[in-house]
Amino acid sequence: MELICPAGTPAAFREAIEAGADAIYCGFRDETNARNFPGLNFSREELRQSIALARRKGVQTFVALNTFMRAGDEALWYSAADDAVTIGADALIIADFGLMAYVAERYPEQRLHVSVQASASNPDAIRFLVEAFGAKRVVLPRVLTVQDIARLTRQIDCEVEVFAFGGLCVMAEGRCSLSSYATGKSPNMNGVCSPASHVRYREEAGALVSELGAYTINRFGPGEASGYPTLCKGRFDVGGTEGYAFEDPVSLDVIDEIDALKAAGVCALKIEGRQRGKAYVAEVVSSLKKALRASPTERTALVSRLRAMSEGQRTTSGAYDKRWR
Amino acid sequence: MKTRRTALSLGPIYYLWDGPKWRDFYFRIADEADIDHVTLGETVCSKRQHFSEPHIADVIERLEAAGKQVTLSTLAMVTLERESRHVRDLIRDAHHKVEANDLSALGLLKGRPHSIGPLVNVYNAATARTLAARGADVVCLPPELPATSIRQMLQAMPDFAFELFAFGRMPLAISARCAHARSKGLTKDNCQFICGEDPDGLPLRTLDRQSFLVLNGVQTMSNSCVVLLDDLAVLMEAGLTRVRLSPQDCDMVRVAALYRATLDGRIEGKEAVRELEKAYPGIRFSNGFLHQQEGAAWVARGRSATTAGG
Image 1 (cartoon, rainbow over the protein chains, first blue to last red):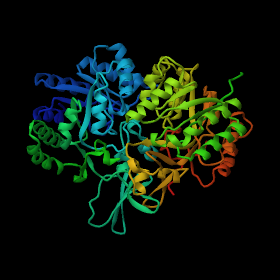
Image 2: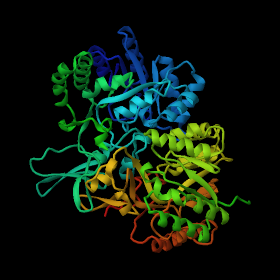
Image 3: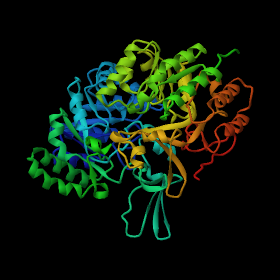
């Protein structure tokens, strides 16, 4: 299985190459990609240099154009696609049907990967994307069990990539407006979720309260580890009971399932984290690369190191395990 | 200038209502509501389908006898073989128009007239044109879209029917996990249809007791109810031809009458909003997405925005 690694900066890109990435995904420095954070992403020139370096090392580069085009401003997305093709991206990762149609028509030879944001969760959906846009690979939404994936891959003529490590969306990706309901900024339209610009912390009677927009997302008592107020990982009150209504502050880790995913027909494992620093990228990529080669018993030791780096330091196999539902 | 009459459309019930309640709701819509199009059928969770299925034929017959155009809704999220089969069978056997709510239905409906529901991501005219070329002839736009995008799409495709999600709690997210069942100590696979206890959603509040969201099975919705009564006139001028009402557990016949009267210019938008507060009491209204603000905001026309938290 290929290892698909994140790069938010040219420095992280170089680290990922050295650490053994088979392919690296990145985006332009604007709202055409779903990690549109200050200080992140690539200029055209930075992408050109990075792709040239990757080529020499035999590593592929995927360019994420995975937000939805704002009506009237489609030119921003079209020119990003034009430039990514011209510069030599090995694949474009796309969520918007209009942009897929543009790329399929104008650049029929260009490899098109379907972003997780498109939410293609079943064989008929993937057949549609292959038939309509010539999609070569689909990144599956995190709503399927390993058994579901195995059943799916047998029925389609398209490569399948899945998320293996990093941040975890609790909701079906590309189909969540919770962030914009609270802040006006959404993953689909702005490439951000629970943006830092709308986060506030306040002290209240010894407790630390985190807010997103006008809403309290969590309250941490004295001595309790605090965390970033990602909306779906907040604590809320449902029917008088307080708790993590959607999901605890955990991150995704399916390293224990590597062999099962491979047997299920998955061709590539994706690491989330374009917003992470280069040291994180280097550590995660090299550990996962070793884990892919290791026997299941050796894998356990490799993985415990990685888990210490995870958000909240607790991990879950998420929807890949049926019991998560 | 003579303009087309803006049609009123009723979206599918997103909540789990028991069979008789579901049936009686539509019988009353058939008999009393001035609504042109009705889209129906379980959309949120495949486990619920048996509640409405015994009544669908009777409901369709009654609605059609009353002159309503009936469209069948497909599931928003299809992951199981059983769900795929259901969508395929529905599309193959349907004598009615079908509304696509996920990508599998989009693929299967190619070449025949169909509708696109608000849970499919249509954010621009390029996407709408791509879907129209495959047979879509009406698109209900996602609630997240701002008016600037809507106007741009209306302008780019003047002969195409766009529908606006103009009343109801907004569907904001869907998950493989059932937060509703979890909140009552159950799991999705053994849920005992517990979401049926909350016919208008289960309120989720912040730790500071702010109203925020409601849980509806695997779907998360806004606590506030979208109300675009005072925003419709300008969008109709821009070419909007269809307005969607999403059923809530309130007097939907009255809601439909207020929207019809507003569309026909028989009542002022602001007055209609005040009247609506009586039809759906105790619920906060919102229209922030349309005004490019947080979705929860309520923007009174000609005034500055307010964000409600409490």
